[in-house]
Amino acid sequence: MLHRLRELLLGPPLATFAQGERRLNRIQVLAAFSPDAPSSIAYASQEIFLGLVVAGSAGLALAFPVAMAIVAVLLIAALSYYQTVHASPSGGGSWIVARANLGLSAGLVAAAALLLDHVLTAAVSLTAGVEGLASAFSGLWPHRIVVALSLLLLITLLKLRGLQETGTLLSVPVRGFLLRQ
Image 1 (cartoon, rainbow, N blue to C red):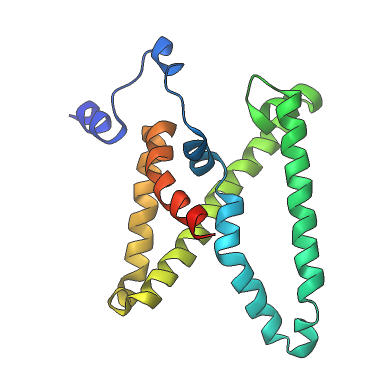
Image 2: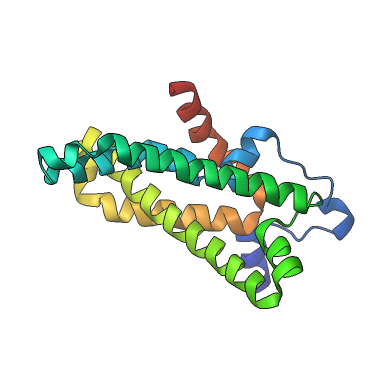
């Protein structure tokens, strides 16, 4: 019974040789692996501006320096990703590179940081997205917590099913966001 429920929710297990045949296209990869930048663009600007407005005119004078700091962080992140890809062209990312160059403890710290970042990005993005939807459709406002938790459960199940399913479904809002820009 438990095995059938697991297979229904997560899908059947793949044979090792079949895993290599499941490839993601660029939009699926963007949706599955890099939600940070698109989600930050979607909500961070508004939140930063609101924080500066609370500080008054002195806060608004900091808008340009804050924007430049964000650009600097994005450039550092892009350079870091570039170096990571070249250091480990066969894949694995930060965990592999940190473990190979700095040892197991550094690899585990990198892996934990990535997991924490992924969880926080999902939570903040979902919260901002549901708040935006609830603002547009006032009937959702009293149910926004249930909607956010339901979406989080859906994304969790998709992630457990595999990257191809996750990338395929999450590519829909990513494509919409990219087309809107």
